[in-house]
Image (cartoon, rainbow, N blue to C red; front, side, top):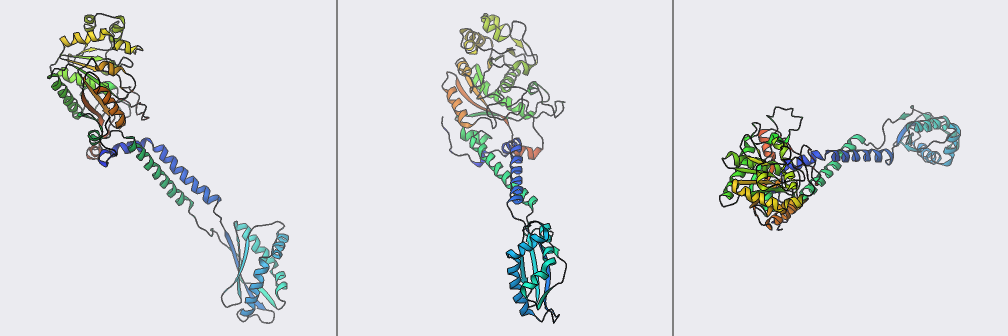
Length: 480
């Protein structure tokens, strides 16, 4: 394996893949937002001290002179004495005796400028406690005056004013939203970073820079529109049949280009072509079927063989069912004559292509695929058909494809956008290059680009699911 570059470039990243990833992981972003919002609410609600204040104004006057502004020096002395009394043990005992229970709060007395006015402020974490303490002081301030001076009295000038807001203002909702958004952004960046670090192939630039094999074709994402079905229902695999009128021109043209490459290889003496992938859900069965159909439509005699005996799906793609005792897997198990097997093919009515299909899975596939009988069937097929196209199992799970590649002349690896990391793809390419058949190259499948969405404004609904070990299960309509 040879990685052509050590780090991904921005040109190798498809924004649409990241957008789809974030939409799939939207629950994580919402969870991060809620964690941030709730954390701020808990912190501000329990750890940040809140203080309510209650204030009143008093005037220091002489028993013989009622002027408020002629005794500023006496007021200054009284303020100092009152501050000590109000904040001392005496005041605590007096309030406790008056209220009959203890309340929390602090008392502060300050002189208003160079006057005989005193501002008295009671602070507490409860507006009720602040008001109760202030009322207790007002009821007992005459008793306090006896400790100060018999010639000086306090006169209340206004009713207590209780603040209705906290002294330290915190907008819990706004701070919670900002913290939640920041945490969600951090989560989004982490998700994007892990996705980029994973190294999956997202566009043509990444494929050319990262893969050890040449790119022989790129198949665009196919829209489900035009099928006549509800857009909310996932279309069946057979809707991607290239002979369907609902298939887009771009999809059809891309398959024709792949078929042209196969025809070019056939002109050099190759007849048997094997389609495989690294993992399930990359669309190699659909690409193989449509390539075979295109070759048959171009007036070539084609034999299409479904040798993914562990999980055959071509009967679903073509909507056909082998006759009783005519399933290709059953014929191999029974050891039928190669001529009998080739005479049991199913003909596609639209193209005339011959098919060997199985309608159930088999457990002893290695023995069947490596048996001399299969080699005899393919050898006989070489004398009857111009092209033999094989749909084989994924390379990442079983050794079936490596066994089959020794029977083929050329192998093609189907790679679906943003599924398998480039190092794993290169490992698969190395395995195919080590086999007897020539490795012809890679086919990029289900390629989507944000620029096309922005330009044309249509959505995509590819008909078969991812369902792979990489955790991006988009659908379950098929496993190939």
